[in-house]
Image 1 (spheres, helix red, strand yellow):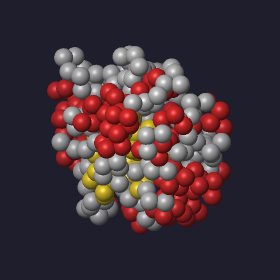
Image 2 (cartoon, helix red, strand yellow):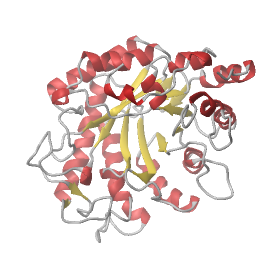
Image 3 (cartoon, helix red, strand yellow):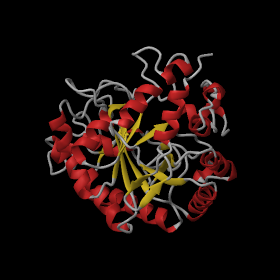
Length: 376
């Protein structure tokens, strides 16, 4: 097993243990838990196993937990009755217990608010009679005829659903909210030219395609207190289109992000598959780095942290193609981004953050897909 040098361990502890502010929230360190859909909430209600799942990771040193995606209160928002919802008395009571437990363990937590849009098929739970809806009734693979283009009334209803969920999040004790605008789901479907073919004010050039997302952000911002953080997650890639891009240049990216920042986004969560890959030519900055540079807002990076090939070798950067801890720390020293979100490595090992912060790299557990089958 490869041994991490004392210098690398000391750098990790020093850099990752620093607190960071997102609007009125102080996150105790730079490690976030990335949102990962788990489907362990029958009836959309997070139970005691979900409470323990999140609180274990907070107790082990994760500074900011971003929950799995949670459906907002719109009939076409989801596709499973086992994915948690962020509406309904019983569902919100379950989430209140999650937030309370995470706080008791010393962490901070935000729910990821989610509408899947055209990813849905009619007949799927939790509301089988609801149609799939999207900006143009077009799926991410470009197919038509399996959903409906949203009317203005539909748009207004969904915007209001996000705002209600955000207000509920603040009311029941969460520290902020994250809006899921990535990976080809509803908000992203408006941002992407393949799925947004509208000819009204919500379609057209990249700036026009941000109108729906900006309206969601503005409505959320108005529904919560001024110091309550609003985080926006976005991506270039989609679920079934890894080469998809919203922006080919920094200038195009700025045109998309600027209206969102102006609408009230406090931090951006830039989702990539491999965080160490530069986003544009002639610069080493990744997507989170460009996001912070262009908007001035705090940025969260994510993408295969601690993974890809041999676990420890990937984590420690042995092999330039893998990136790893030294590269991550170099970028953090340059202030390229503010937090690093960890996904599957934290799914596998609830104590991952504590081990990294303590320099106990020899105790890290390699990822095993079997971890997907339980809430460990």
